[in-house]
Length: 303
Image (tube, rainbow, N blue to C red; front, top):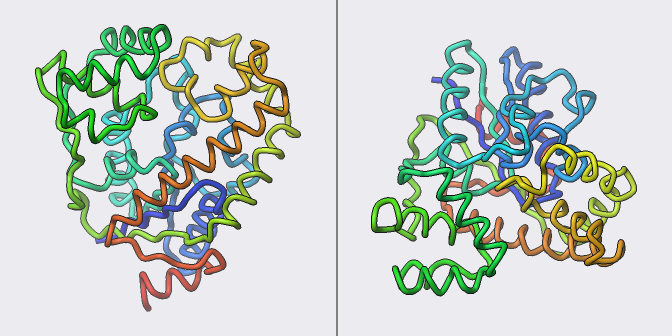
């Protein structure tokens, strides 16, 4: 059976470019390969600069799946992504194509490749909880969660608003919520995970450079266009790092410099959470940032 190559790593490590290199190197070896996105924000049409979405030119002719297929007003859930990604992986393999899964959303990747069952959802209920979050703040909802399920509240931080809402949604629908995520248990055969290793200082520098480049490339103008299409009302897209800060700048709550600096800080915090998550997974083969596509494939798929 053809392998599924999964490329992980924190923001700004160059995962996207390496994934394309891997696909092109496989093609050079006579094996077709296509990329499956596992970043929760690349799914949205128009969210380009702030997500570092690869342009058509940067994709270098490699087919990309699960990019630009949702409107910003839609909710990109992990459960939906799991279904779509697994279906795409199967479809690629059926055509004799190696799927290269790449993205920075750790929970989405976990949901795609591992045995991960999801409790029922209710869009109206989630929308109500999201509005309540905006009105009363995360601390109030976290205290409510503590009342219903102290163990869940202990394991979910106040800053993780998406999981707080998900927990309260599950409790209202089923009466319970399991805060502990599933163990590492592949739901797909022949998965090979590769992690890009980077030291903290280099990572921080690359994040700062990327954010500044976003601002110089018209990020604020991109957010203004998306606001006209309903970004502010979006249950998920509106909370993306960078987009939230630019909206605060446009609302006069932050200066240009403050919005940019806060985006850098939030992105660095996010990258640390990413690495902390992946470092717990013993199945990932970590390679230095400078490792080339041929070197990786030589180890994964020796001739």
